[in-house]
Image (cartoon, rainbow, N blue to C red):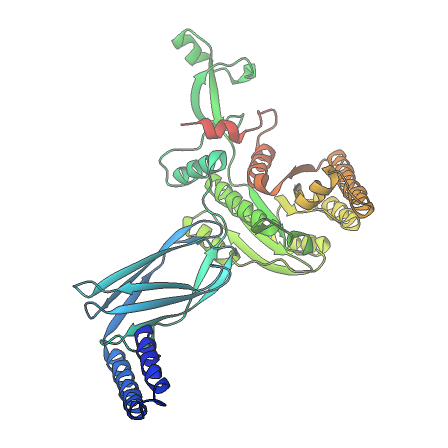
Length: 444
């Protein structure tokens, strides 16, 4: 491929052809110059093709959906070499291919660092890193692939700010045995002593310590451990809707994995069951850091299927997945009136053997339509339909509450916090104060 310099020279030669009508010898000179330029271009390209050039790419330790990371490329070749690099990236990782001009320094080295913000989870293909090398005379480019194609994994959200991040940090440190997570409540394992509070039950007063210190002292106990948790993660049609850059399933999966980390740190036995109109994945986690990593590796590429969610199939499968009484947390989004009735029946069946907890992701589009001001007849009909869905969700929550089933509802950006608070509240001993992530976030 000729360079800009070669094109300019060819333009000058073309000018000689234009004056050939006046000076006939100019035509001969132009032809000779054309042949000479063509030979020089071919020779320059051949010399560029023989030049050594090596490249290496260093990916960040973890690519996470929505998190900006830096990718570094290192190049080594002939000093002064002029290159144009092209990095072909999957649309899930970057809007399009990236290009960068590079000139090797006096030591024959150069680097290129670019930033990526992955938009989707899953395995993404990366095309070969290609480079155009300019010939020594600057007349031609030679193109070659420096790195082979490869696949990279983009994981769901693993880093959290605020109270959720603080809770996960405490859970991790507790797993490592350095700083246990302090949970207030009545339990059966002695944990620590603290000053008496007006809300503490009298039965928790430690009378011997009170006599020694001359003031009321309360015994603080740890919660019981080793519970069984099953997370039913809906991957049906309702979870495919996107608000901004992430789908409901993206938010629900991130919340599920956060809960896996907290529950495993508590010593609970956890199983994650992803379902749509069939069982998609079943992953068991038994508390170790390696098991949690395997859960991320097995669930990171879950995709929503454009089918109706079969809640009855998930309940039937649960009988073989977990035979003992467990806490069953269902993460879904109720936007269909018929699906709400199927869901209610499925949770009623779960209640006979397990402790169900429903976490409902509020639909952002439904909320906007319900609370907006319609500007046309179509928008008015949409508003009425949205209000009916919200009313049906409230009726469903009320009926489930009367049946002893706890229901939590939250927008997508708060679903992780709501999921953790609901689970910890459900696992709190009877009579204990429900935990709050706001208080957890203020600790330390």
